[in-house]
Image 1: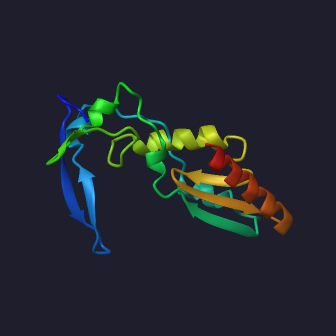
Image 2: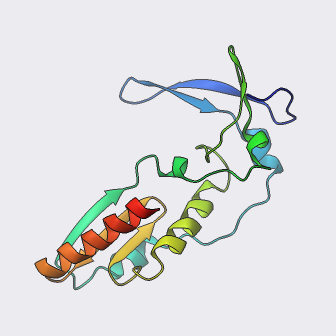
Length: 151
C-alpha cells in the first residue's frame, strides 16, 4: 500500500465484449510524462515471410505475459492507483503503460535471441513455433516450453 504518491491514478471499470467487467487504470498523465521508448517492434510482414518453407506451426499467446515483468523498485510508485480500500501500486508491469510493448519485446528478444528467426518468431506476447519435420517440431516445442518455464 502506498501512502502519498504524486502519480496516483484513478481506476475505470470497462465493459468487455464478452460482458465481463475489467478494471483499468487511467495512466494518461503518466504516459504523457514518460519519454517514448523507440525499441523497434517487428513488422508482421517479416514474421510471415520468415515462416515460408516450414510445414508445422504453433501459434501461442503469452496470456498475461506483461504481468510477468517486475517493475523497477523506483518506478513502482508511478503505477499508483486509488481505490475505495486504499492506494496501491503494481509490483509487476501493468497493462496500459506507454512503453509496455517495447519493454515486453525487449524481454522476449533477451529470452529467445538464439531461437528467433530460426525456430520461433516473436511479436510482443505472440509466438510462432515452426519446424519442417515432426521430430524437429517436438524438439522446438520442448526447448521453447523449457525456456518459458525457466524465466
